[in-house]
Image (tube, rainbow, N blue to C red; front, side):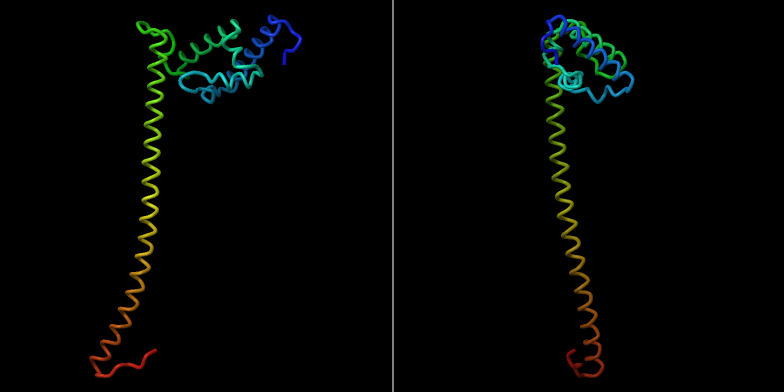
Length: 164
């Protein structure tokens, strides 16, 4: 990484890596792959830039570049609005309400997935039961046909047919 370099040199290298990463994302246009919880994933960015996540918080140049980038992405509609200086609401309230909304959304998604899985399981069980009942109906229809022929013969002749 940046062993043997001063903090200033290491910071400058990290800024260059981050700016190169931004340029690469702009050229490939895959920003949405990095959006998590209404902002860019710090973990993914740091991994691809080959530095620690703490660099995004502690290096002032990288931190400012990231803040500027997220504002631009909100203006472009890639990131959702609400986490960027909305007037009348302080940052803690915005982040707290955003986390509550995300948690609520995740809980609703989990419930709907559970309901869907339960419904799918029930449908499968009903399909198996239906197939079983159809096979039983076919067997009973076959027997009914056989016994109807025996009954008709018995009615006409008064004698039973020899067993098959």
